[in-house]
Image 1 (spheres, rainbow, N blue to C red):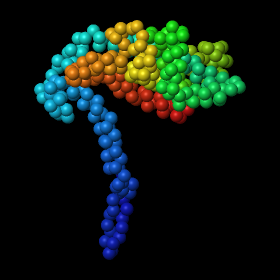
Image 2: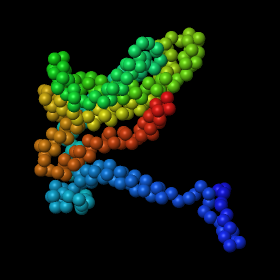
Image 3: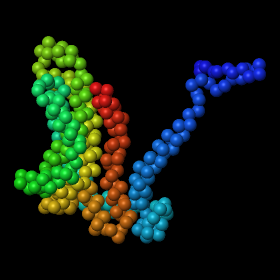
Image 4: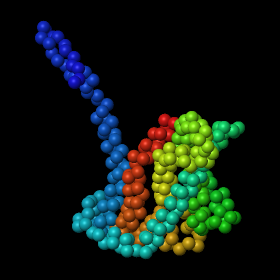
Length: 297
């Protein structure tokens, strides 16, 4: 039960509002700002999805209206297109390979930085942290020249390898606190039982670091799935057919080729973003949990 405050006025006790339940004028403002931010973020997504159920004539006549009637033909056209499924295949290959590479390379580098004591460790960690401030646009020209020299330009490997490199700073920044938070006594006990460092890594450290690995894996997958600039630099100027381009490039090419069919373009765009959106929403709690553990570590 909450305590109440009694005020005596003119000899008659008057009960005020329960203590600790005072009205906070800041609460409505916070909710209003949250609703505005949510509307700005979700509104365009809902508009694109709903626009896919409208004809181009309907969109031209009333761009802000709702579907009337609801038309499924745009989505049927996209879903029965071999190009769309080829783009999906390319995105799945690139995102999966990039995620696996990021998780493997990230956990090995983070293990060394977190559990080994050597000269220059902090400097190396700071170098990875500085990578967060190094955008892909700065490296566009030298990266393209390097990939051409290595013969990787126009290939999936030319996207996967740089994608892993650019995702490593975030991965290491998240994983290192996780691994440092594991007590040294646990490692010492494992050594007494005869475990090597590698055995400790595989049998004890990896299971304990699972929340962090899931977090960095999800972030890497979503970033690779939505990546546009890197595939544009590497794949669009290569010899791969458009049917094997990833979805972000496929959306651009489709919208250019069918620019007069606005409804089909919106349907293609919504179908391209739905997998990553659903994947991210389903894994939201794991992402928050992993980031919270990294901050605590």
